[in-house]
Length: 174
Image (cartoon, rainbow, N blue to C red; front, side):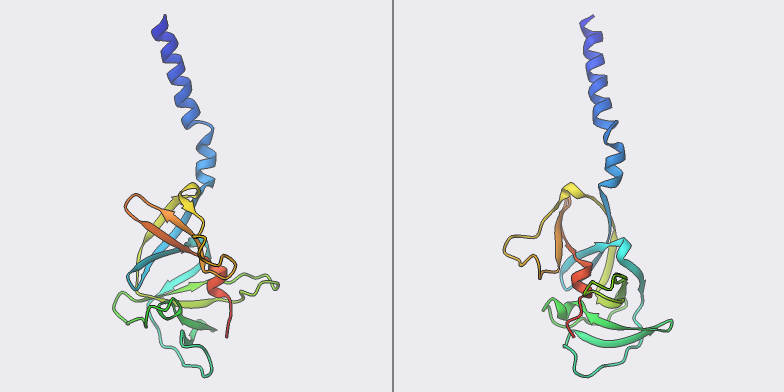
């Protein structure tokens, strides 16, 4: 009889572990796209990406910061091209066969300082990443949260991942 009771308790625990959290687990997963700039891996939410393309020709624009390489035309839409390596003070990106442009979708809110789309030069893509929200820590206290570009630090089994704020990347300072 005690074995049967123990079996019921174990069964109930298994149900509690798996059952009620199933819906929450799907909601708590953030899907990201990982990429490398310099020697570091970063990620951004997949929902903010319009597309990822191979490098195309761009036109230099005068009187912009060094990290703004210029503008490029993507299917009739002219948008700025930003070198993330220069933006992060890691030197300039070197064009290789793995170099890509990530085109991020800006918010459509007119009240936001982030407007429109922009392309960002990255060294290479890594992988699509799914991570639970509870495995993402806030940026370190030493960073200015309101001005910083870091959404959080994702803890993975083998390493950590810097998750960037799309709004901060798209914020126009030029």
